[in-house]
Image (tube, rainbow, N blue to C red; front, side):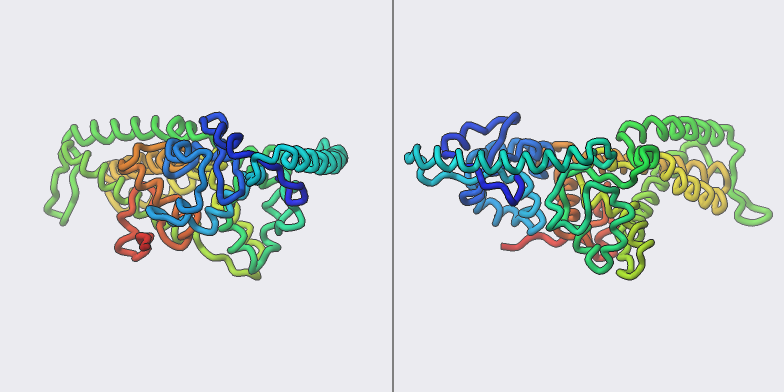
Length: 379
């Protein structure tokens, strides 16, 4: 609802009727919110919100078990649709209020229609409209070239998430190159994992692979070592995952550097600004191939080729699992009490409240030695 539009009024009975997965409303005091589109995204699961449909969430928002952050409250405001009529019995009052709000909405719609007619053929129409008077960027235009101008305001702005699509570039081909459906990750990389994994295992099975400790002494590497090398690679990936997320994706670009701010936004900032943009939750294979190639070359320079490739295969498999888990943490509904449920809650806290900690995605292991664990809430 636009801030300039007069609020609609609803009776308690009307609000209570919207308690299904197809239409779910909640209250915060007297404010009414339609959270239907958020059901799938909610960290606590769809059932948790539906069990509180039509009810006041004021105490729930304060916790326990979880105190919702200012960003979570700001996020909720995107679903605001009107006010609870506290004089439900006064039908005439309700009718008058509704008529006034409908007239205001018609005027607002006419104004919006005129603006849309002026820009009907623009590619920027793919983005939802926002209150341009309050936002720091123009959402009708590509954001990639705007964010660098935010300077010292960028860090705070990018960490205030919104539920709307982002258009990075005006050029359709460039824009399409920044989007990847989740299934392309296993389609592109798993065949390589299977092929190289089988190649390494059969090579080791021939019994010709040895590690030379000195010029006169070497140790044979049997095929039974392959699973150990594979898991070493997977474990190594979890460390790389942590380092990239913390030191690259969460670098804080200097406020005066337009290009670094733009680069940060393209790499990761856009994901924090719009965390539920399903087309940008996994790495495009082209971009990922750069990191994958560097990982492979580093291992093969450090270890004998077969051993290095065996470790690489484990790391590449770890990367695929990482991207799949990351997508699931945003759009999946893990069972309450499961490992993925705790990971989802942990990752959502990273997005909405603790952006400078909680960098582990597939595991929180590395957050402990580097002292970046998200603290438990205390009431």
